[in-house]
Image 1 (cartoon, one colour):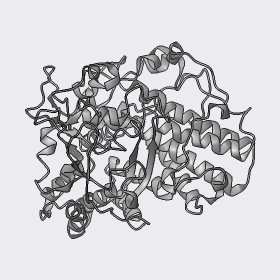
Image 2 (cartoon, rainbow, N blue to C red):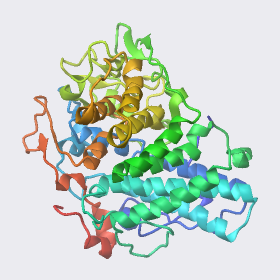
Image 3 (cartoon, rainbow, N blue to C red):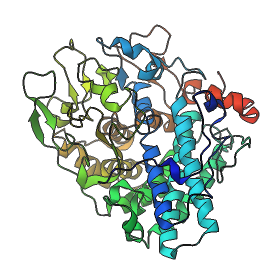
Image 4 (spheres, rainbow, N blue to C red):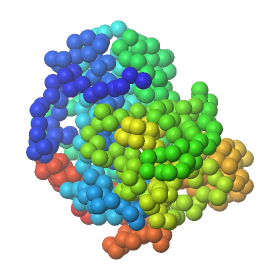
Length: 499
């Protein structure tokens, strides 16, 4: 795939230093008028949007790390490197010692940078008409990304959808346009979901009749690396799922299951990673750069050390670290869920320098030192929706079909078949989801939608009381970063409780 490069020349930017981030997003934005003259300019700007999704604050690191590190899936390895004690290694995600100065700052900036970039493109398309199919494809991708990014921001900075009965609690500012100097306030959760659904429905309507060829002259790469019809459906399915609207979530999830995807086989390959003396087993479908789990990939990002602002914060550094002292590991509680013969045990490796029972996460091995920060991120893959349909069926439909679906996942993994019924079946599907989607950015958000706390096991050595978290909790709505609080007097009055 041709690398996506963030080309700031396609939008008129405000030059900023580190200090200027106090007045950055969403208050101060970029403007498009002088640069987006041609279709090629527009696609270059759209490529830049995809590059911003790969940034360290978004899918490149923070948004993938937080949901596992901040729950019962993660732990601090006993040999955690000293560099891991600083902000770069996101230690607050595990300790849950959250404050406005250190918590998910990059995600707020990168999320609203992405939204601003999308809004710039959409604003320009209102002023300049290109080919109709070209316009529609670009608009559709922008609408879908805008909806996804706002939805993702709510998952970190707001309580769950049903936290209040009428969804009147604060979410995040929904930005349809990016106007420098304005002070947007936080929309309610109901408003954010309504706006995102409007964007998604428009995107889906457009994408249903488009195949990507409309802009192929200006970019290259597989469809899975760009927003497409099924990934837009997937975002809407996730939103219905989080709402507890299992009927509509099932409709959307089943449409994905009927799409052009199939579950990738899980097979074993032996490799000798750096600092290892003997071959080690990995899952072959994950031991590659991009695409990974290719047959079931719906939307994926390809991250390279040249693509982002990692500063030693890529998933490679966080999880496996070639010298055997990664910053975050897998909890004993999570590992205990996998049977001895489960092929997915090969996502977790004892490195030579690691004293048992530490297990490092090797779900993103990339090229293991050949290109130190190169790996693929499975933002959306078929397994998620097999399990989503299974859970929805167990709740509102056919238990027989729910069992068939969930056992497509267990069978592939060489795990025991699930045979339960009733409420136990729902619990077993949720557990299977925890296992299959571990370290892909789901666990915290699943706990929130289920309105559950968690208890970490004996390997939790925290002394701040956060080995156990009880729902409801302020820890499920992270603080708005301090630079936004300082820059925006409206947001200043709308900080999350407890911060």
